[in-house]
Amino acid sequence: MPSMVKKHTKCRICGSKNLEQFLSLGKTPPANSFLKKEDFKKERSFPLRVGFCHNCNLVQLLDVVDRKALFSNYVYFYSAMPTASSHFGAYTDDVIKRFVADPKKDLIFEFGSNDGLLLRAFQKSGCKHVLGLDPAKNIVKFANKNGVPTVCDFLSEGLAKKLSKKYGKAKVVIGNNVVAHIDDHHDMIRAVKTLLDEKGVFVFEAPYLADMFENMAFDSIYHEHLSFLAVKPLTYLFNQFGMEIFDVKQINRQGNSIRVYAGYAGGHKVLPSVQQFLNKEKSLKLNRLATYFALAKKIGKTKDKLTKTLRELKQKGYSIAAYGAPARGNTLLNYCGINSKTLDFATEELLPKVGYYTPGSHIPVVHIEQARKNHPDFYLMLAWNYKDAIIKKEADFVAAGGKFITPVRGIEIV
Image: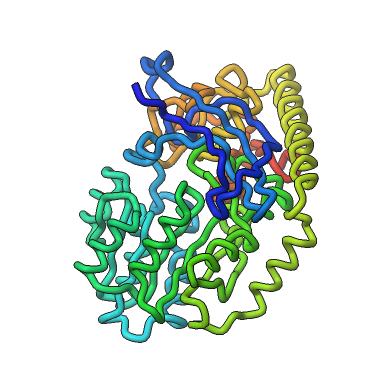
């Protein structure tokens, strides 16, 4: 049987072998590999080690799990995410206003398009020529059924040549929450250039490395996220291929993310935002290994504080469950050793997860409506990045005396 994991020894942006590990979260199953009880014995775990490139400063996983095992049948649907529709509506307006001259003719291409929620927003705004690409068969089937033409495959330069020949060049190429999932960044950029019109724009959103420091968002570390992106190493990447970043925005979604705008070098005016982000990263000392060792110590202290809080609540006889069963939550649960002995269940609105168990921790997942009929005393808010929306949605739980425990940015009970 071929190995499902390989050790990563060269930086995926600059090719340097000068990588140094600063954090290990142990061995965990893939964060979205929800399973049935009868499959517990067959479950596989893989190392979750994080390293720093001394040359270009990219932070990256040091072990790469086979992408087919991670993405071929996916349980993350954009449409089920709180605030996704409103976010993508504003996103669409921004892109069309700035970069789409002829909505009826200009091709909008998105890789990692998931269930087509963003491309549907473009369609509703008058864009007639959209195309999605995603490797998850179940999600592609859903997208096509809902009127978003979507190809089922992984992005590659070879595929890009075929798509470009068939559909023409794209005025906008989009990649949301997918760039960090890709192992071969060089092939990705070559594919984007193949697809992109010379005056076109590549726009993508990704979790921002600074979020780990500003929000202690270490739960964004899991096998799907191969890189933890910042503007400095991304600048290095694009410059190797005759492209450049010309604008960056911070997006307060799923913690702090960045939206990056790139194009052919010299094709767009480089805005001050790019230098502002570079300055911010320098002030946070993201170019120094010592910064990351200090982060690793803080992560260890967060683990100790959270497990102590949960242990004390259980000793007092309180019932606790997990609110949400997001991928990031499974990193937290497995790293902290939290399982069904501590949490009675995990809630979920996403039907593909309901009736399954969380990977590694083996906590049963129930629908939120079922949980509301017999709620616990406390919820550990695994989907903390949607904190405000969750508290508003669960007003009855709060009114009945229920409390939420937020596991990052300091352990808080609200």
